Amino acid sequence: MNAELQGILDERAIKDVTIKYATALDTKNWRQLRECFTRDAVAHYGVIPDCEGVNAIIEQVSGGMDHLAQTQHILTNHVIKVDGDSATSVCYLQAQHLRDDAKPSWNFVMAGQYSDRLVRTADGWRISARSLELWWTSGDPAVIAK
Image (cartoon, rainbow, N blue to C red; front, side, top):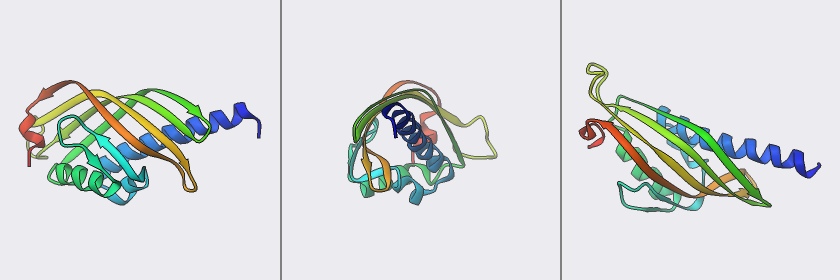
């Protein structure tokens, strides 16, 4: 396969991993979330302690989201750079969190940027490091508190 076509396919696969991550959060599909990371991945979400290892990431994320009625994570402005079997990806994030379906005004919105390092594995591209830079919030932060 020529290098240009491989680059396009790699970028598409990397973007798909970031979207799979957002979909896993919104559907609370923690098994699918596991498929987005390497076993030894690290995550820095800024507002919570750093997570080391995919099990810690899933525990932290699921523990913070299982009590929510609904979330919607929107990713955009992807910039991906591939270098052989490693890559970086940056994308914008806007995430809405709804605590109670009966009170749709009780929500919390976060916006920022994910910066990722990824590696090509036998199972495809996986995030090896994820960092969230929070830019702004709106609404009631008590929504995301346990």
